[in-house]
Length: 416
Ligand code: SAH
Ligand code: TMP
Image (cartoon, rainbow, N blue to C red; front, side, top):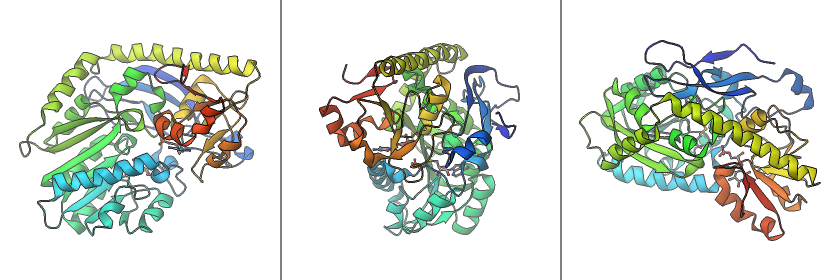
């Protein structure tokens, strides 16, 4: 049943409504795992449709569930569950400190969406002044237990003013996989402008629109991901606040991300790869609606290919399971209509998801540690973005004849 508590993301620079370029149907909350079958009947669904704003060049959800429904005291995603991502944030904390903070005697670091402290704990342990902005209480508590200072609120212009008032300006503002979650992008731009020191930098990384188009990885789209950014759209939305791109770095994380570094206009020199990345985005057509209409056709094909493969394997009597109860896979299962009749269970390392049912299609989620005892011959990589880490730690699965299934960049059995 569709609910009427969806909000409309405020991302057009001029007010005209967006046309639908990709319709992913009725979807539940990507992280809305259900504790009991009694909750199925009242589950929240909304219409997941995407539009492309020809003025801001933002690819985005047209409607988004109210953020309070997604980020709360029981938020399911915990950053430190991935060893690779933990290492990524540790290394980055070092690089950013050397590149941007070394000249300042007492710098301030602010992180938007600090989750369980996976990034900021490396500043906390070195005695660097910092503030994590995190609205989800359960993960904020984990961060605080590691010495991280947390403001338990949504980042906005008001939050930025509060932080500046008590701490002064920030020399580094960082956000990973968080900015794309925030519908009020104008409020973010205003907040960054308010909080950033004159010579400060704003660095953020998020799943990259260019990769979604290239890989047809439509599962990067779910309720929490309101926007898929590109260098071109970021340059446009921050222009008004006098911020400009000084670096663009493509990353392999989360199935293809981009790290955007912005500074105040004229303060720092842009790296040459900013220009070259923007040029390749134009070549890829990331500024044109037609690119996303073509993407929609490839997405429909991907979903039907996946369902056909699973039905074929199930028809041969094979048990199929999934690995990684990701919010991404919520989009896949609900769009392609894949439920427990095709995937018997999902293995996942996050305690908060175990023993629950996946959103919408209600596949049981079980502890990752039980995978070793699974008799299944086929496992769908719900967490395809963590393929390397998952295959490495489960080498025995392939050694005993098990096969991984992925749908990115096309539906196939790995190793074929
Ligand atoms: N940075 C971490 C967490 C990403 S998950 C990582 O990359 O692993 C996104 C986080 O952003 C969640 O912890 C969520 O609670 C938080 N969040 C959502 N909306 C926010 C907002 N408006 N301001 C700050 N954090 C927000
Ligand atoms: P993400 O794609 O949003 O990072 O979510 C990854 C999910 O996969 C998360 O629920 C944790 C789970 N996971 C495992 O169960 N085992 C693993 O080895 C990894 C890397 C992730």
